[in-house]
Amino acid sequence: MRIGWIGLGNMGVPMATNLKKAGYELFVYNRSKEKAQPLLEMGATFKESPKEIAASVDVLITMVADDEAVKDVYTREDGVLAGLKEGQIAIDMSTISPETSKTIAALCKEKGVEMLDAPVSGSVAPAKEGTLVVLVGGDAETYEKVKPIFDIVGKASFLLGGNGAGSNAKLAINSMLGIYIQGLAETVLFAEKAGIPRETMLEIVKLSAVGSPIVNIKTPSIIQDYFPAAFALKHATKDLRLAMDRAKEMDLSFPLIEKAANTYEDALNAGNGELDLMAILSYLAKK
Ligand code: NAP
Image (cartoon, rainbow, N blue to C red; front, side, top):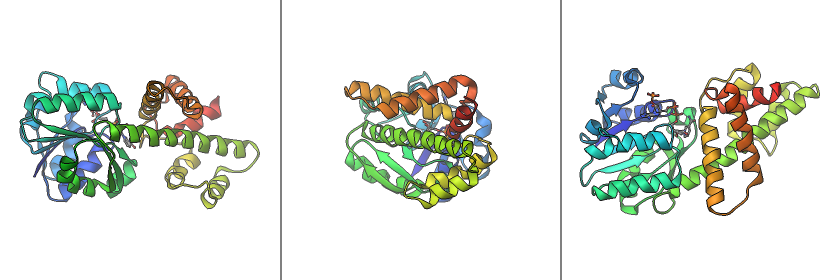
């Protein structure tokens, strides 16, 4: 099976690397070509446009920033849709709105191509380890065909319904992530202000019922007060924004998601977008 991979950012590089290591014939494209270098050194082939890569593979995967990036990569003149042919499978693993997932799937269907939305839960470390959780929306038969791919990049995959179902699940879990990370930041700052060092408070959290694997992952950056992006704050803000949009569409009110969305939005506007979402801590500390 020839796989095409578009989008070699923080997540795309480790995920595509695992597919290459598993023995798939891999074709890659990234807007900034230099980011493809690690994959090319492993024997992947670079294609010069989304159209060219789509025309060269059996399964085409996109892992790009947001709705605009997915729409651009699929619909531009030299985009994916211009290259896809009947019988191929497209998978979008980016975190985007369910609406855009459904729109792109419908455009693919017009070309006789089944598309799955398959965003992932888990950040760069699980991406490297192949232990992401893959949240899938789309056709059941297509899911079964590409499940071996999901089994390489992830430790579990869930087919949740038709197109858009994976994106809905992803927005739901990232709402919890945004709230939890803000809660962790506030807990650590609360304790610090009361004279309890960060290290000690983090140890207490880890040993208590409210601990979670993400606390281990974020501990070094919290202690060092240094937040290089694993999951960029701009993407976390985008996800909370999309979750609020979905809540409005469903006529639901989620006070915590709304609060968190506003905090991340403010932190983004204060210039923290390229940092990790855990930089919400330093933003709140300064505030
Ligand atoms: P990232 O490091 O910011 O990389 C974004 C990728 O999208 C880059 O390859 C970028 O190309 C490409 N891109 C952006 N706009 C584009 C456009 N208009 N046309 C073509 N390519 C475009 O992001 P990431 O952390 O890998 O995340 C990718 C997706 O996964 C996002 O939807 C994110 O929310 C989601 N996600 C991230 C994590 C995480 O922990 N990082 C976890 C789960 C899900 P350039 O290199 O040229 O900029």
